[in-house]
Amino acid sequence: MNRMRRNWIGLSTLVNKEIVRIVRIWTQTLIPPVITMSLYFVIFGNVIGSRVGKISGFSYMAYIAPGLIMMSIITNSYSNVVSSFFGAKFARHVEEILVSPLPLSLLLLGYMAGGMVRGLLNGALVTLVALFFTHLEPAEPWVVISVAILTSAIFSLAGFTNAIFAKKFDDISIVPTFVLTPLTYLGGVFYSIALLPPFWRDLSRINPIVYMVSAFRTGILGIKTMPLTTAYSFMILFLLLLFGANWWLLKRGTGIRN
Image 1 (cartoon, rainbow, N blue to C red):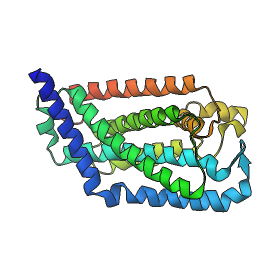
Image 2 (image 1 turned 135 degrees about the vertical axis):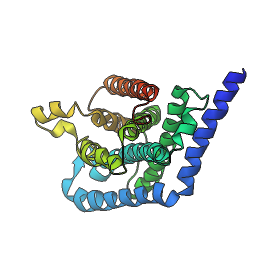
Image 3 (image 1 turned 30 degrees about the vertical axis):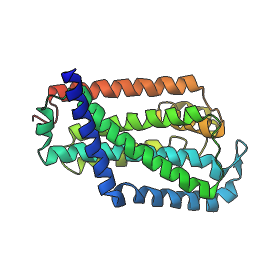
Image 4 (image 1 turned 90 degrees about the vertical axis):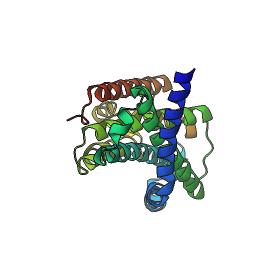
């Protein structure tokens, strides 16, 4: 019981530290994503959307809303963990955490939870912004909630991987710029992959973000571009692989001991 209580105190302290960090610098963690997504709604939804017309029976504004919410969850979950853990490495206080009796799995879970809090909070704020531009009524609320949680967890872990290998501040921006952003834009946020030619449609299926955006859009609008079982299978697989890989890297001391 003492060990369980000690682990719980350590985990809750780490999560609380991450939440306090998010709230303390709210002008960096909460406001910029809301402004950015508002511009997307204005430019793509109003200006371009009026020329595009309807997609799958929905206005273009309503169609891109789930994708933009998902984009906010992805980018903020990722950036919170990569900046927080790399900051701990850079300031050299990560050693104090690693020598604590807190198991590595709970250490990883704590950082993941912090990223999820920021990602989901930004997703909720962007949803409120979207309601000013279009009407959204979730067709399957449980799908919306579960996909948002899984996505934020996956990209929190992906940000942790980036932070482990990063050796300087420039390294934490390379992956978001050259990998994450292209995958997000090509993940069906602004279009339906069903409209693509067969070759490009099949190629898009290797992009994990396609499954997340598609499932989230299904939950909000009811549009099914792929089976939910397929989307959930890929998300759970990525979650387990990333958690296992990060735990193994922590155990080896990769990026920390050298």
